[in-house]
View (cartoon, rainbow, N blue to C red):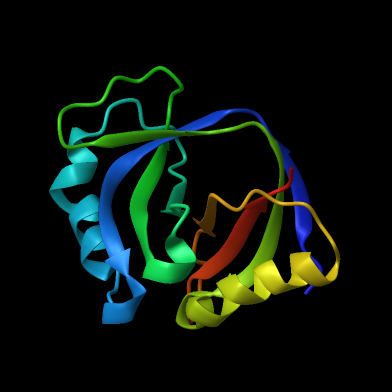
Length: 152
């Protein structure tokens, strides 16, 4: 499970968010349906080709509450103004680790990525992570995904 390390400049994404509660076995699927429907048409400055991510932002009490903010996002131009109801998030520049994952196994792949970093004694940011949704190759049976963690 050796990750790929990629250096990124500051990047901005826009989309929609919800609070997910892992105690209630909630799923962000409907959020993606909404983003790919009417919400996408309202987002300004979408970069081409489109790059979609699922961003998890963890509050300081996540380990106790198991609640966090999940955002379905598409990359936009850095200074693109967004209308009401569309969130805008800028990810900091720096080195990010990309772990190969699968849509079907994300609930296991995300903790495995954190465990790898802990075992390898890698210093990472714990306030957020994201899934990088890659284009589906012709003939593929599943959407390729990477779990991404920012190095400190």
